[in-house]
Image (cartoon, rainbow over all chains, first blue to last red; front, side, top):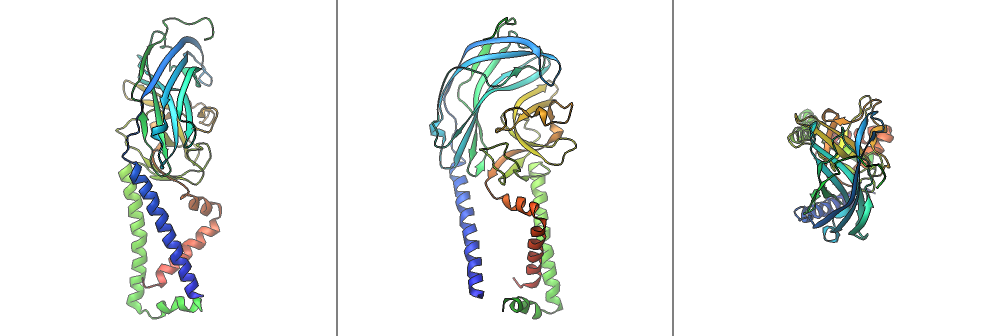
Length: 177
Length: 179
Protein backbone atom coordinates (compact mmCIF):
# COMPACT_ATOMS: atom_id res chain seq x y z
CA UNK A 1 0.00 0.00 0.00
CA UNK A 2 2.81 2.32 0.91
CA UNK A 3 4.81 1.71 -2.26
CA UNK A 4 1.64 2.06 -4.35
CA UNK A 5 1.00 5.53 -2.94
CA UNK A 6 4.61 6.61 -3.22
CA UNK A 7 4.72 5.34 -6.80
CA UNK A 8 1.55 7.25 -7.60
CA UNK A 9 3.08 10.33 -6.02
CA UNK A 10 6.27 9.98 -8.04
CA UNK A 11 4.32 9.40 -11.25
CA UNK A 12 2.18 12.44 -10.62
CA UNK A 13 5.15 14.68 -9.83
CA UNK A 14 7.02 13.46 -12.90
CA UNK A 15 4.03 14.03 -15.19
CA UNK A 16 3.66 17.58 -13.95
CA UNK A 17 7.39 18.21 -14.49
CA UNK A 18 7.23 16.86 -18.05
CA UNK A 19 4.17 18.97 -18.92
CA UNK A 20 5.88 22.05 -17.48
CA UNK A 21 9.06 21.36 -19.44
CA UNK A 22 7.20 20.86 -22.74
CA UNK A 23 5.17 24.04 -22.14
CA UNK A 24 8.37 25.97 -21.51
CA UNK A 25 9.95 24.49 -24.65
CA UNK A 26 6.87 25.54 -26.67
CA UNK A 27 7.30 29.07 -25.40
CA UNK A 28 11.07 29.25 -25.89
CA UNK A 29 11.08 27.87 -29.43
CA UNK A 30 8.57 30.42 -30.70
CA UNK A 31 9.26 33.53 -28.65
CA UNK A 32 11.90 35.07 -30.95
CA UNK A 33 10.16 34.57 -34.29
CA UNK A 34 9.25 37.41 -36.63
CA UNK A 35 5.49 37.60 -36.79
CA UNK A 36 5.15 40.48 -39.27
CA UNK A 37 3.52 40.15 -42.69
CA UNK A 38 2.81 42.27 -45.75
CA UNK A 39 -0.58 43.95 -45.77
CA UNK A 40 -2.60 45.72 -48.49
CA UNK A 41 -5.29 48.16 -47.38
CA UNK A 42 -7.50 50.20 -49.71
CA UNK A 43 -10.35 52.54 -48.87
CA UNK A 44 -13.19 52.25 -51.35
CA UNK A 45 -15.54 54.84 -49.90
CA UNK A 46 -15.64 57.05 -46.81
CA UNK A 47 -18.24 59.46 -45.42
CA UNK A 48 -18.49 61.62 -42.33
CA UNK A 49 -21.74 62.35 -40.50
CA UNK A 50 -22.55 64.07 -37.25
CA UNK A 51 -24.96 62.44 -34.84
CA UNK A 52 -25.60 61.77 -31.17
CA UNK A 53 -23.37 59.06 -29.76
CA UNK A 54 -25.13 56.37 -27.68
CA UNK A 55 -24.59 56.66 -23.91
CA UNK A 56 -22.55 59.85 -24.37
CA UNK A 57 -25.50 62.15 -25.03
CA UNK A 58 -23.56 64.50 -27.27
CA UNK A 59 -23.35 64.92 -31.02
CA UNK A 60 -20.05 63.65 -32.36
CA UNK A 61 -18.59 63.08 -35.80
CA UNK A 62 -19.19 59.59 -37.10
CA UNK A 63 -17.03 58.21 -39.89
CA UNK A 64 -18.00 55.29 -42.04
CA UNK A 65 -15.61 53.40 -44.29
CA UNK A 66 -15.80 50.68 -46.88
CA UNK A 67 -12.42 49.10 -47.43
CA UNK A 68 -10.55 46.23 -49.04
CA UNK A 69 -7.98 44.19 -47.18
CA UNK A 70 -5.43 41.69 -48.41
CA UNK A 71 -2.98 39.76 -46.26
CA UNK A 72 -1.70 36.21 -45.93
CA UNK A 73 -1.51 35.17 -42.28
CA UNK A 74 -0.61 31.51 -42.93
CA UNK A 75 3.17 31.87 -42.23
CA UNK A 76 2.43 33.46 -38.86
CA UNK A 77 0.94 30.30 -37.39
CA UNK A 78 3.17 27.73 -35.66
CA UNK A 79 2.79 24.99 -33.03
CA UNK A 80 2.60 27.59 -30.32
CA UNK A 81 0.19 30.00 -32.01
CA UNK A 82 -3.40 28.95 -31.39
CA UNK A 83 -5.19 32.11 -32.51
CA UNK A 84 -4.61 35.40 -34.27
CA UNK A 85 -6.81 38.32 -33.28
CA UNK A 86 -6.63 40.79 -36.16
CA UNK A 87 -7.83 44.38 -35.89
CA UNK A 88 -7.91 47.27 -38.33
CA UNK A 89 -7.10 50.50 -36.56
CA UNK A 90 -7.59 54.14 -37.60
CA UNK A 91 -5.22 56.67 -36.01
CA UNK A 92 -5.42 60.44 -36.20
CA UNK A 93 -4.77 63.64 -34.29
CA UNK A 94 -7.23 66.36 -33.24
CA UNK A 95 -6.86 69.69 -31.40
CA UNK A 96 -8.36 68.08 -28.31
CA UNK A 97 -6.54 64.74 -28.46
CA UNK A 98 -2.97 64.16 -29.58
CA UNK A 99 -3.62 60.46 -30.09
CA UNK A 100 -6.85 58.86 -31.22
CA UNK A 101 -7.04 55.17 -32.00
CA UNK A 102 -10.25 53.50 -33.14
CA UNK A 103 -10.63 49.83 -34.00
CA UNK A 104 -12.91 49.66 -37.04
CA UNK A 105 -12.92 45.96 -37.74
CA UNK A 106 -11.63 42.75 -36.20
CA UNK A 107 -11.41 39.06 -36.97
CA UNK A 108 -10.42 35.90 -35.18
CA UNK A 109 -8.45 33.25 -37.06
CA UNK A 110 -7.82 29.98 -35.25
CA UNK A 111 -4.99 27.61 -36.12
CA UNK A 112 -6.18 25.33 -38.89
CA UNK A 113 -8.67 27.79 -40.40
CA UNK A 114 -8.14 29.56 -43.70
CA UNK A 115 -5.65 32.32 -42.91
CA UNK A 116 -5.64 34.15 -46.22
CA UNK A 117 -7.45 37.48 -46.01
CA UNK A 118 -8.93 38.84 -49.23
CA UNK A 119 -11.77 41.16 -48.31
CA UNK A 120 -13.32 43.35 -50.96
CA UNK A 121 -15.33 46.49 -50.19
CA UNK A 122 -16.42 45.47 -46.69
CA UNK A 123 -18.11 47.78 -44.21
CA UNK A 124 -16.41 48.70 -40.97
CA UNK A 125 -17.69 46.58 -38.07
CA UNK A 126 -17.59 49.19 -35.33
CA UNK A 127 -18.77 52.77 -34.99
CA UNK A 128 -16.07 55.30 -35.84
CA UNK A 129 -17.11 58.05 -33.44
CA UNK A 130 -14.66 60.86 -32.72
CA UNK A 131 -14.28 62.24 -29.21
CA UNK A 132 -15.62 65.49 -30.64
CA UNK A 133 -16.44 66.67 -34.17
CA UNK A 134 -13.06 66.75 -35.87
CA UNK A 135 -13.27 64.12 -38.59
CA UNK A 136 -14.01 66.29 -41.62
CA UNK A 137 -10.96 66.56 -43.85
CA UNK A 138 -8.94 64.61 -41.30
CA UNK A 139 -5.84 62.65 -42.33
CA UNK A 140 -6.12 59.19 -40.83
CA UNK A 141 -3.68 56.27 -40.88
CA UNK A 142 -5.18 52.83 -41.33
CA UNK A 143 -3.11 49.89 -40.16
CA UNK A 144 -3.72 46.18 -39.62
CA UNK A 145 -2.48 44.66 -36.38
CA UNK A 146 -2.71 41.20 -34.90
CA UNK A 147 -2.44 39.79 -31.43
CA UNK A 148 -0.64 36.44 -31.36
CA UNK A 149 -2.38 34.21 -28.79
CA UNK A 150 0.04 31.37 -27.93
CA UNK A 151 -0.67 27.99 -26.41
CA UNK A 152 1.68 29.31 -23.71
CA UNK A 153 3.93 32.34 -23.80
CA UNK A 154 4.10 36.03 -24.60
CA UNK A 155 1.11 37.87 -26.13
CA UNK A 156 2.74 39.67 -29.03
CA UNK A 157 0.99 42.55 -30.75
CA UNK A 158 2.29 42.92 -34.30
CA UNK A 159 1.75 45.63 -36.92
CA UNK A 160 1.51 44.84 -40.62
CA UNK A 161 4.41 46.08 -42.69
CA UNK A 162 2.36 48.55 -44.71
CA UNK A 163 -0.24 51.06 -43.60
CA UNK A 164 -2.45 53.46 -45.51
CA UNK A 165 -2.81 57.21 -45.18
CA UNK A 166 -6.25 58.50 -46.14
CA UNK A 167 -8.03 61.83 -46.02
CA UNK A 168 -11.66 61.83 -44.92
CA UNK A 169 -14.18 63.94 -46.85
CA UNK A 170 -14.28 67.68 -46.11
CA UNK A 171 -18.03 67.89 -45.55
CA UNK A 172 -20.83 65.89 -44.02
CA UNK A 173 -22.57 63.37 -46.22
CA UNK A 174 -26.29 63.44 -46.98
CA UNK A 175 -26.80 59.77 -47.65
CA UNK A 176 -25.56 56.31 -46.57
CA UNK A 177 -22.43 54.75 -48.10
CA UNK B 1 0.06 1.31 8.61
CA UNK B 2 0.35 4.73 6.96
CA UNK B 3 -0.91 6.88 9.81
CA UNK B 4 1.62 5.62 12.33
CA UNK B 5 4.51 5.91 9.86
CA UNK B 6 3.72 9.57 9.29
CA UNK B 7 4.38 10.34 12.91
CA UNK B 8 7.54 8.22 13.22
CA UNK B 9 9.71 11.02 11.85
CA UNK B 10 8.11 13.39 14.32
CA UNK B 11 8.50 11.10 17.31
CA UNK B 12 12.22 10.79 16.62
CA UNK B 13 12.71 14.57 16.80
CA UNK B 14 14.02 16.36 19.85
CA UNK B 15 13.12 19.92 20.81
CA UNK B 16 15.79 21.51 18.59
CA UNK B 17 14.57 19.59 15.58
CA UNK B 18 11.01 20.71 16.24
CA UNK B 19 12.15 24.33 16.26
CA UNK B 20 14.00 23.62 13.00
CA UNK B 21 10.83 22.24 11.43
CA UNK B 22 8.82 25.29 12.46
CA UNK B 23 11.51 27.62 11.11
CA UNK B 24 11.58 25.62 7.89
CA UNK B 25 7.85 26.11 7.57
CA UNK B 26 8.28 29.83 8.19
CA UNK B 27 10.99 30.01 5.51
CA UNK B 28 8.68 28.49 2.91
CA UNK B 29 5.94 30.98 3.73
CA UNK B 30 8.40 33.88 3.69
CA UNK B 31 9.91 32.79 0.35
CA UNK B 32 6.50 32.55 -1.27
CA UNK B 33 5.59 36.00 0.01
CA UNK B 34 8.91 37.43 -1.22
CA UNK B 35 8.40 36.03 -4.69
CA UNK B 36 4.88 37.44 -4.88
CA UNK B 37 5.83 40.89 -3.63
CA UNK B 38 8.93 40.88 -5.81
CA UNK B 39 6.75 40.23 -8.85
CA UNK B 40 4.46 43.08 -7.83
CA UNK B 41 7.42 45.47 -7.86
CA UNK B 42 8.95 44.09 -11.07
CA UNK B 43 5.72 44.28 -13.04
CA UNK B 44 4.25 47.40 -11.44
CA UNK B 45 0.96 45.59 -11.01
CA UNK B 46 -0.85 45.01 -7.72
CA UNK B 47 -1.78 41.57 -8.99
CA UNK B 48 0.94 40.24 -11.29
CA UNK B 49 -0.87 36.97 -11.99
CA UNK B 50 -4.62 36.68 -12.52
CA UNK B 51 -6.96 33.80 -13.31
CA UNK B 52 -9.47 34.27 -16.12
CA UNK B 53 -12.93 34.00 -14.58
CA UNK B 54 -15.32 34.43 -17.50
CA UNK B 55 -15.69 33.36 -21.09
CA UNK B 56 -15.90 36.86 -22.52
CA UNK B 57 -12.48 36.57 -24.18
CA UNK B 58 -12.97 33.20 -25.83
CA UNK B 59 -11.48 31.53 -27.84
CA UNK B 60 -8.28 33.26 -26.70
CA UNK B 61 -8.79 32.79 -22.96
CA UNK B 62 -11.01 30.31 -21.22
CA UNK B 63 -12.12 30.18 -17.59
CA UNK B 64 -9.23 28.84 -15.57
CA UNK B 65 -6.41 30.17 -17.75
CA UNK B 66 -3.60 32.15 -16.15
CA UNK B 67 -2.47 35.61 -17.25
CA UNK B 68 0.84 37.28 -16.42
CA UNK B 69 0.39 41.03 -16.14
CA UNK B 70 2.68 43.99 -16.57
CA UNK B 71 1.91 47.61 -15.91
CA UNK B 72 4.79 49.64 -17.28
CA UNK B 73 3.66 53.23 -16.69
CA UNK B 74 6.14 54.59 -19.22
CA UNK B 75 4.52 52.52 -21.97
CA UNK B 76 1.10 54.08 -22.66
CA UNK B 77 -1.98 51.96 -23.22
CA UNK B 78 -2.79 51.46 -26.90
CA UNK B 79 -5.67 49.92 -28.85
CA UNK B 80 -5.50 46.15 -29.20
CA UNK B 81 -3.97 45.55 -25.79
CA UNK B 82 -5.69 43.27 -23.32
CA UNK B 83 -6.16 45.08 -20.02
CA UNK B 84 -7.29 43.95 -16.59
CA UNK B 85 -9.29 46.68 -14.91
CA UNK B 86 -11.65 47.19 -11.98
CA UNK B 87 -14.91 49.11 -11.91
CA UNK B 88 -15.53 51.24 -8.84
CA UNK B 89 -17.74 49.46 -6.39
CA UNK B 90 -16.97 46.02 -7.76
CA UNK B 91 -14.26 43.65 -6.58
CA UNK B 92 -13.93 41.41 -9.59
CA UNK B 93 -11.43 42.58 -12.22
CA UNK B 94 -12.42 42.40 -15.89
CA UNK B 95 -10.11 41.15 -18.62
CA UNK B 96 -11.03 42.75 -21.97
CA UNK B 97 -9.44 44.30 -25.04
CA UNK B 98 -8.95 48.04 -25.63
CA UNK B 99 -10.80 49.10 -28.79
CA UNK B 100 -10.62 52.90 -28.57
CA UNK B 101 -8.00 55.25 -27.13
CA UNK B 102 -8.07 59.04 -26.75
CA UNK B 103 -4.97 60.71 -25.31
CA UNK B 104 -4.85 64.49 -24.78
CA UNK B 105 -1.79 66.62 -25.49
CA UNK B 106 -1.11 66.62 -21.74
CA UNK B 107 -0.96 62.83 -21.64
CA UNK B 108 -4.35 62.10 -20.06
CA UNK B 109 -5.61 58.81 -21.50
CA UNK B 110 -9.14 57.40 -21.62
CA UNK B 111 -10.09 54.21 -23.36
CA UNK B 112 -13.00 51.93 -24.21
CA UNK B 113 -12.96 48.15 -23.81
CA UNK B 114 -14.78 45.16 -25.26
CA UNK B 115 -14.61 41.45 -24.69
CA UNK B 116 -13.63 39.50 -27.83
CA UNK B 117 -16.57 37.18 -27.30
CA UNK B 118 -19.09 39.97 -26.62
CA UNK B 119 -21.21 41.64 -29.27
CA UNK B 120 -21.03 45.15 -27.82
CA UNK B 121 -18.50 47.28 -26.02
CA UNK B 122 -18.32 47.49 -22.23
CA UNK B 123 -20.18 50.79 -21.68
CA UNK B 124 -23.07 48.77 -20.29
CA UNK B 125 -20.72 47.24 -17.73
CA UNK B 126 -19.14 50.43 -16.46
CA UNK B 127 -20.48 52.34 -13.46
CA UNK B 128 -23.58 54.41 -14.37
CA UNK B 129 -22.32 57.64 -15.88
CA UNK B 130 -18.88 56.21 -16.58
CA UNK B 131 -18.02 56.26 -20.28
CA UNK B 132 -14.35 55.40 -20.27
CA UNK B 133 -11.73 53.39 -18.43
CA UNK B 134 -8.77 55.38 -17.13
CA UNK B 135 -5.27 54.55 -15.91
CA UNK B 136 -6.28 54.36 -12.26
CA UNK B 137 -8.82 51.64 -13.03
CA UNK B 138 -6.14 49.42 -14.59
CA UNK B 139 -4.68 46.57 -12.54
CA UNK B 140 -2.33 45.50 -15.32
CA UNK B 141 -1.99 44.57 -18.97
CA UNK B 142 -1.86 40.97 -20.14
CA UNK B 143 1.62 40.12 -21.35
CA UNK B 144 1.94 36.35 -20.93
CA UNK B 145 -0.43 33.41 -20.91
CA UNK B 146 -0.50 29.85 -19.60
CA UNK B 147 -3.63 27.68 -20.10
CA UNK B 148 -5.59 25.65 -17.51
CA UNK B 149 -3.26 26.20 -14.52
CA UNK B 150 -5.61 28.67 -12.85
CA UNK B 151 -8.38 26.07 -12.56
CA UNK B 152 -6.92 25.06 -9.19
CA UNK B 153 -7.67 28.54 -7.84
CA UNK B 154 -11.23 28.48 -9.19
CA UNK B 155 -11.95 25.08 -7.65
CA UNK B 156 -10.48 26.17 -4.32
CA UNK B 157 -12.65 29.28 -4.38
CA UNK B 158 -15.82 27.43 -5.27
CA UNK B 159 -15.19 24.82 -2.57
CA UNK B 160 -13.54 26.66 0.34
CA UNK B 161 -13.55 23.52 2.53
CA UNK B 162 -11.23 21.95 -0.05
CA UNK B 163 -8.89 24.93 0.20
CA UNK B 164 -8.65 24.65 3.98
CA UNK B 165 -8.18 20.87 3.78
CA UNK B 166 -5.32 21.14 1.26
CA UNK B 167 -3.58 23.98 3.09
CA UNK B 168 -4.02 22.21 6.43
CA UNK B 169 -2.60 18.94 5.12
CA UNK B 170 0.35 20.69 3.45
CA UNK B 171 1.13 22.59 6.61
CA UNK B 172 0.96 19.44 8.69
CA UNK B 173 3.16 17.60 6.21
CA UNK B 174 5.89 20.26 6.28
CA UNK B 175 5.84 20.50 10.05
CA UNK B 176 6.03 16.78 10.66
CA UNK B 177 8.52 15.56 8.07
CA UNK B 178 12.30 15.81 7.94
CA UNK B 179 12.86 16.87 4.36
